[in-house]
Length: 340
Image (cartoon, rainbow, N blue to C red):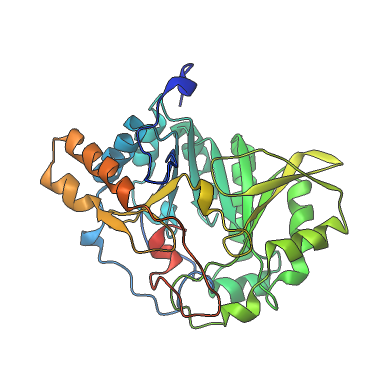
């Protein structure tokens, strides 16, 4: 992917009724995953029938429409995106677009030994890898069926592939992995990686634990870390909601905090999501949506109709998500179906 010289002159065309510019789209390519993480899905998940999913060509077309409308960052997610057959073709198609500044992926890392180099060659700039523990037995418990060694091997493959940045995402849960915070931080510091700690999202019934009891706030986590490291807040952004801190003794690694509960980030939200079925979600924690699959199939050769529909959907984007851990999930769809 070649970065354009006039990127800053591209005028965003996706502006919601609160004046927020949408410049970041997350495209879920599948709701399936080879893991069953306890905070993401139930153990007996029922996945979307394959025939209801967007085709790879439809995903590419939707991604290109967003780019034409001023979106400069696209993230492909899942489920686990690398389980989708021939998905590299979508990365290649989007990665060839000069107006796209940042093409990224969120993955659990289990398939990166095979796909890290093809992703880099396709134009992926940065990669996020989910890792909540460095202990094999605990990894198996949290993922319900995973092998830590596969993800660790995938992380090393990603580092060796030479992405602009490799970052870990970790969901810290009280009583599950809150005793490994320092271990995870040292893991990234030793490899010049970043790490983002994410407050658990109340999405879908998971049947494993009470989220109000396992909740671990970003504030509590940051205070704990500041007892062990000298951290300085920065204004750096990667296009998402993370607030970053740098270490006094390590210029290469950063800690990010994504805080949907303790520090609502809705006021400056610049994101929309497209599910693997083609539903354009205007908010992570609300129901407002538009069926893009219906639009693309009704207009197989008319990209202007698709772009017009996306522009019109900005009127549906709500002010915020209003998560509440003490109530039943506002949204019954799981994170794996939403595009985690």
